[in-house]
Length: 275
Image (tube, rainbow, N blue to C red; front, side, top):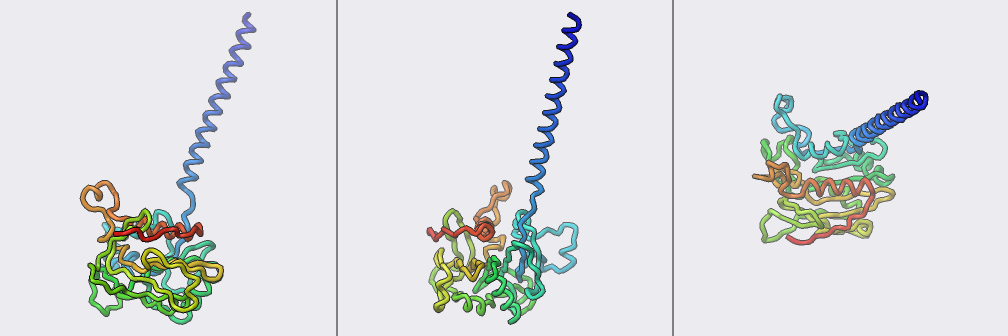
């Protein structure tokens, strides 16, 4: 009898030990899974802009101050993307699968225009925010090189791809609230894409002219006829929305969705719904 209980007790201890080991392994597997989700590498995104996203207009002292914070639009994009600031396309060495965001960039030298076109044709994916009449507030007067560009200077690129950027002349308020699919966005003096020449057949224009989606060679360029929508004045929360961390308008979600569509090469099945 004693031997029988001993054997029974031994089997019980073995079962408990195996059960404990299984629980430990499951725990470590769960932690590893959670850690893998948190540590997943971010998508690579190169950024060129004259907007005060990377650096404030307060100068180096303001950017290095203890309470300095990145621009909210850049901070939001940094949550999803490993951002690589660039200032010259001829020296840029794109990483594999890297997206490129041009947000009201400076004028390009001829060599940069050729490099950009060749990169897209070879499979590059690009999002351009081009504003015909930027209203972004600035500390610097008009004409100062430190000020964001008032109007896009990429017309050679647009013409080469069969597009023209214009500023619609209307009697309405320059402030615009537009509903594009699920995105309710607000901005000011948005532009409009018009087809130009036979090359325009490669571009699909939608959202009341605000968006153009161009298939160029093996690559793709999505063009948005506005850059003011990145300004926090048009999308950041107010009142209770600010307290809860919500956005008043979906400007940033809209830009993020455009980048996501480029990354996954999904079609832009969106259109203008109404004000």
